[in-house]
Image (cartoon, rainbow, N blue to C red; front, side, top):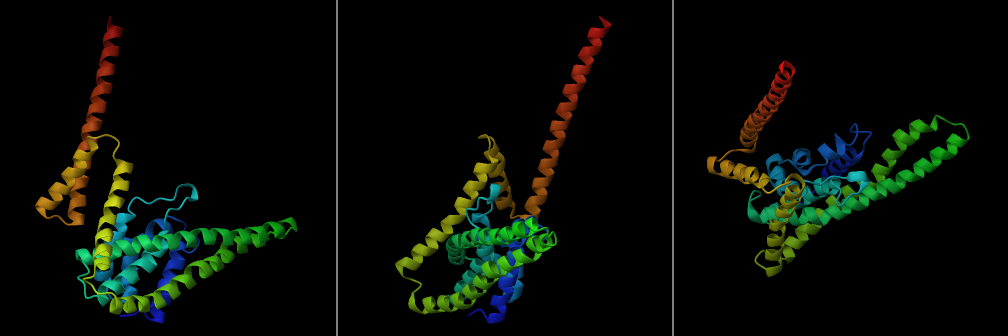
Length: 281
């Protein structure tokens, strides 16, 4: 199985749009929505003709990067490459090997591919930033001449050129020729070899790194782990889907909120009663 030129071009366009703050109304819609593997897998699935399979491939990648943020422009891995290069190439690899897309081996491939191409995205991110500096320099030079119309071009059209060069073209070429390389590797590398098994094993462990980063962000005291473990236990024992587990969590969150609000109101009421007593005395 290979990726056609049309599919590769569509993946390049999605990468370009998701990385562009202009086309996607800022980073909220772009970087923090369309760039996320689980969201991007829907569009990749529509392009590849297998939405379910691409979502299954994207889940391990989403877990790895679940706590990824870009504070102050510091980027450890840019998800445009993870989503629009990693997902399609991992999907092609798993399909060419005849693997169950929801199985452990496919998850291992997805995890390893996601970690591999994350560095490509980092190069794309900083490459775009550097190229945009050229447009900023042109803009300042024109402003010194009194040409204020240049602002529209610098803030709107010129950055699109950056995304076209840094996002669209590389993503299209890597997907088009990378899928052929994947097919060649499938012919050359036996599935029962030790190095392929090592790839599956390491890739399967990577989602645990993502969960560890998430726990490091949200767990502030040891007792917080109780809620975390309880959630996994109840979801597993009751066989809950992700949506059902979210609904159960929302109910517990509401109960916890109401209990804290009642305790706060009781505390305020007690303080008022004491004040009244002192005034009577």
